Image (cartoon, rainbow, N blue to C red; front, side, top):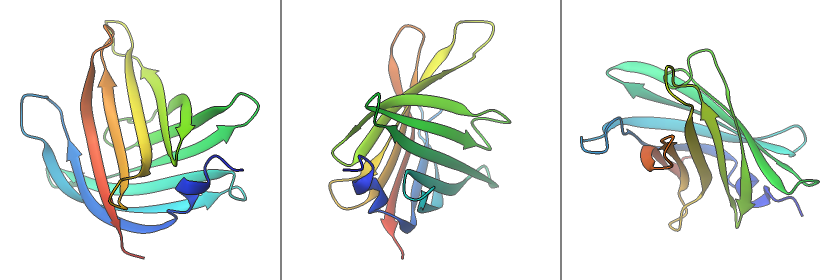
Length: 153
């Protein structure tokens, strides 16, 4: 069975709310968001293309998710106009019960690299959820992005 089957069953158009958390002690920046989840490469991958706003400026991103059967590892490549500039974040993790949970790291000069964890999957209420966490070099995890979508098509 394709480990991405349940995520691929969410293919379609979605709309919802995007919450950007820059400081866990401050209110999040909230905007509307739209997303399209599509099968890619003959259904071997799932791609989520989404948009959102920050301070009145449109932003967009894409998350490409796959599963390497040989290693039993979920993989992801993430790009986002606000978060990533001209770089991509490569992540690995697991696919469990219709969701993926992957982690990668990014440079944070002049200090050590920071981690970034992304989950994508069906929420308990039938929503599509993309949740991202910032991981400090000391291993602390902070909510950074929460996007919750309801199906429009």
